[in-house]
Length: 214
Ligand code: HEM
Image (cartoon, rainbow, N blue to C red; front, side):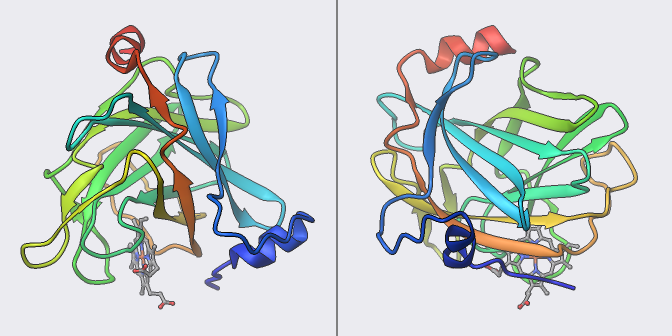
């Protein structure tokens, strides 16, 4: 079964039926890594959430590197973040736990079949904030090539560091069966979209924080 949990539906369930165009994110300072993140809690089943966090440099240069964090309950097989809010023609950063090893992979596809490894964006896993424990797995990674990327033809999409950007996620209950970033992914059960506020995700000490957590 595949669901698309409408944000309005989820908002209504949470008792905050908002029709405004405001972003769907809130700000958190992560005590472990020291990054200030803007975070979205994505419902993948009723009452169960995957947290997606974004931190960017302040000020943000063109084609800025960003740090993202995925915090997923153990039952999440794999989950992925689509930086262009679509399955196709944008970088997809995907994570899962292989036993006690957190794994991250960047994929891309132009059709809605299993996305293949994409080397147009590079990930650096940050040691602090990347872990598996008894209840969750978590990835903290720097991405070069996630904030600005080719889409179709000669078009490029650049995510606005001073405003909201539409992002998407997908979730599967099926865990890939290896720690290889090229592992086979089975199709998702759920996907959804949200507006992620990057204007509250700025870190003046971005480079130092990347270094300190590496
Ligand atoms: C084996 C891997 C995958 C297969 C076979 C697959 C297949 C599909 C199919 C058939 C749809 C259309 C669904 C519909 O119309 O009901 C879809 C939509 C979608 N998929 Fe995947 N998918 C895969 C992996 C991924 C991954 C890794 C992501 C990463 C975030 C992703 C993100 C999305 C999103 C956001 C949509 C919504 C439609 C869109 O915006 O393009 N998918 N997928």
